[in-house]
Length: 216
Ligand code: CTP
Image 1 (cartoon, helix red, strand yellow):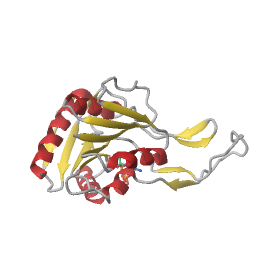
Image 2 (cartoon, protein in one colour):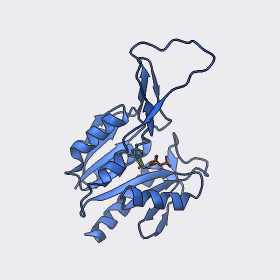
Image 3 (tube, helix red, strand yellow):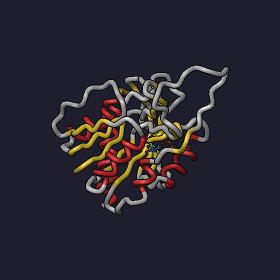
């Protein structure tokens, strides 16, 4: 089985020394890569900037990228031959319209940046997903969580969507633990207890493998 995994944040450059980014650490995505490899899968881990070292498991090939555009290029290159796609990256939705070639100097009291929309890696690849391929997305919502996650699953052609809880201490960005809820297209829900990201990853991988077997 071949798996394409996106993980970590993206950094969108503003000038030679600054970027727009987010607080994703890549921990959940890297834990998923390890869990898939433990099951014998060959994993391509397309990772945005993360402090984590490349996984040592020889079944995991790590491709380092910075921007959403680079993440899309690296993911597209292997998506066709992957059986499972997991989009765990926190991709920046927008990037600066212009990248200044020199450091932007301080001038007025305010500074307005123009941003342009980035490619949606998951949604764009979702349009070319074949029937036997299985796609999993992540979502972090603050209102009407289940309804928004369900809508995102349909829009991006996911088979499953993993909803990150924001309400629980110890879950989400930077933590070693996570609490997630998984939804499928039929609206079926699986709740995971708060546990280590490694355990969440193992649970998600078993669920994905079981669902994939049923889809076949
Ligand atoms: N995603 C992606 N490329 C993007 C944005 C998001 O691949 N440019 C993927 C994420 O990896 C995740 C899923 O899409 O699996 C949901 O991301 P999210 O940011 O919640 O979705 P958005 O479409 O940006 O929705 P929102 O309007 O809530 O920001």
